[in-house]
Image (cartoon, rainbow, N blue to C red; front, side, top):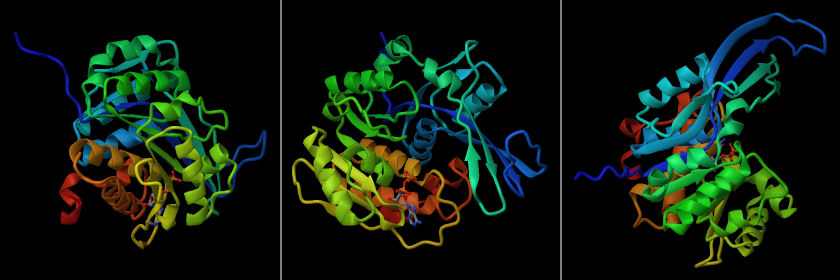
Length: 314
Ligand code: ADP
């Protein structure tokens, strides 16, 4: 009998959002209608962004998520297929619409955003059960906080119990994170504002990030990475409590949207496909990849593919 157990490099349990972006001279006041100059749609959602980045780099990926049974949902399924992401553990529901983020941007680049998570919040334990074989036979399971936190925790717990490496990106920021997240996480990843909320240390420098990492490590995860935008990131591990500052490349930044997701997706890719590399080298490579994403406009559209990788990143 053939064994049909799926084996993925990276399984992402997370969100999908369709960005609906209108560009206008100025943002409307309540009750006002203004004319827009341009409208764009984009594929977003932290879970999907990270999954797409890992897939573009060559990871065998699957996305565990919930979409609406609507045109945005159908388009998202196609987007995953185009990027080689398995859609076997994705489902579409009649109960809610696909998650959307209507965004207005004015001439000064200021924005106003409404996020409607919709179907994302309906991903449940039953969906995880259906994906359980994929989760426990994968190399890395990756989660964020744009779906129900109890579902992410259940997925990470399932992976951790079965010896699968877990990467958790604590975004968007929450102050009251369930302490079990730290226990079931191998690599805990956050940005400056998330680290600030989780530790009560105002994180704006390498030194602040070093202190925040130490606090987060004490909560139980094996390693912590705090990203600092153009300042790179700081990695600290339980094994070696000396923090390592990993600078990033100096680039001409055109659009930093989704840089954090590019970083986390790349991190998952390297952990899965290069298990013998040290975490500081993995972090350096992920940082290089994220810096490439800020050199182009868009979110997923700016993520680098394997064909365009510099040699030292293989
Ligand atoms: P987030 O998008 O979650 O706020 P960051 O802004 O900290 O995440 O960025 C994540 C990573 O992306 C950084 O660690 C860095 O490697 C890269 N990056 C972000 N902004 C820049 C920039 N302006 N120049 C170079 N690299 C950048």
